[in-house]
Image (cartoon, rainbow, N blue to C red; front, side, top):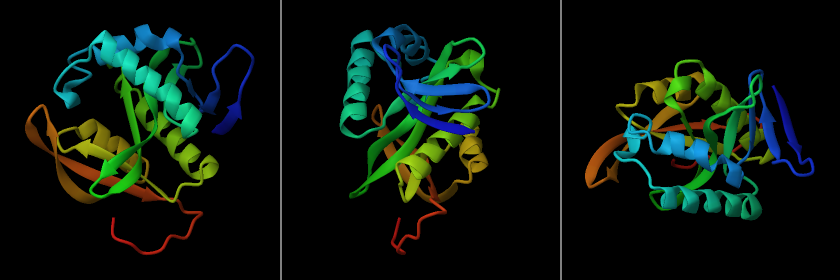
Amino acid sequence: MRLKCMTEKNSPKTVAETGRLLLRELTADDFPGLCRALQDEVVTKVYERTFTDREIRFWLEGQFRNYRDEGFGMWAVVLKESGEMIGHAGIFVSRHGDDEIHEIGYLFEKAYWGNGYATEAVLACRKVAFDILGLEKVYSIIRADNMASRAVARKNGMRVVETVYRLTMGKAIPHYVYRIANPERKTERSPG
């Protein structure tokens, strides 16, 4: 896999490239693709709801701020062969207890499930996190009943370090906290 951090005029920044995928910054033109995924009840089952156009626009604007302020965020996942956006994946900062952690997340349109794209995209995100951003460790916090995402985490070398309960639509849902450390960085032993 090649990692790229380049910007061409009038095109979104390509963040990473794999054998089959490009991960690039989202643009306003990606709004319809985001709606296809985020307004599909099957795809958004982990959230216990779908999202409105307004919520998706707000989230997209937040990604633009993340690119500017943090240098990372959620990126469009595009099939190299066709140029079609099939989902999004990336790195974001989330709260875990009293700590802020760097989490890898993703969401794909249902038509593209079961093809290994999530595993490939998460590996690309992990490489960006470690090789470009120099992060010490990354996490994925996954619902206990999301067997497919748990398999993706394991395939990417992540291991469960904790079980937590998160409130989702008023329900306490068990989640597993997966983590992997950057093999190139020595970290002090610390809890979590």
